[in-house]
Structure formats: structure tokens, C-alpha cells
Length: 120
Image (cartoon, rainbow, N blue to C red; front, side, top):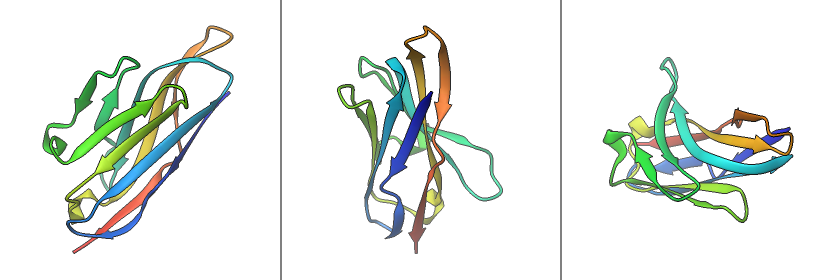
């Protein structure tokens, strides 16, 4: 019904930057909140940032100032600009979207994730 495909992950040195993208497709009437979470090995999934359709943002406190979330509603795409990356940012980054379908069903959808590895 809804597919989320992340891209932009990879290997980067500490202090570097990456920009993640996540495009949503499917039987979508509207996408409400979109966001990014991350999961490091052996740890629980944790919030990175979310953004509403109107552009209101919410960040994990520890990431404010280094990460920026944005979205393009015309493309059903959310972005995550990550600057000054640190080895502890290494994780699988997962995209999520709260989407309403043409059937008026609303659900949370998740992508498969993209690996971000920061070397020291």
C-alpha cells in the first residue's frame, strides 16, 4: 500500500556529512508526519527527528544543531541532513510516514533502513 525507500547512507569519516532521502509511494491520499529513527547494534530504535506536513519539526535533544530534517510534500519525500558526524551516529536509519490512503485508512509505515557508518 505504501512503500518507503531510503537512500543516501554510506561510510563517512568523523566530521563529515551525509544527506539521507526517503521517498514514499503507493495509494497515498496524504502524508501527515514523516520522520527518521535510528537503530544501532544492540540498542533500541530511537527518535532522530520528525516533521509535520506543515513543517513543524521535533528533534532528539542530543542531535539538535547537527541534524536537520526537511520534506518536499510535492514529492512525498523527507530528507535528513547530517553534519559533524560522529562514530556514535553509526546506525541503521529508518524512515517513517503517517499516511492516509485513498481508502481513508491511516497507518504508520516504515522503510527498510539505510546504513550509516562513521569511522573515527
